Image (tube, rainbow, N blue to C red; front, side):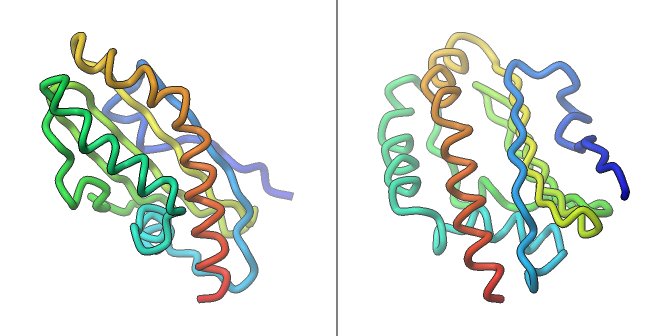
Length: 152
């Protein structure tokens, strides 16, 4: 049996993050093994749980009160794919965000690794509630993508 290695390109630019987490799910039988398909599937508004879409809408409404710009539509666009991992990069004045979505076909796992570097008081205030909700949100998004991509 092969031992999975849990390195992520999400750690390259942010080697000492202020926040980091990893969510691992099972790669469903028949699902694609392409990490881009998984990254796009996880972050697709078409398949996100409704409550996650509502939370993102609240985020868009509230952040200007902190002097933070609203996120552009392509915030979660895949920047690059290297090997088994797709990387999403989003940097702003209040934080730097990386999300690596990896598919380990041999181990039948999908891994979502998030790292965040906070910048200034706005980043810390903004990220305080996000820190609490982030693992729950990512887990729900991954489950939704598993159901959708298993049928693909």
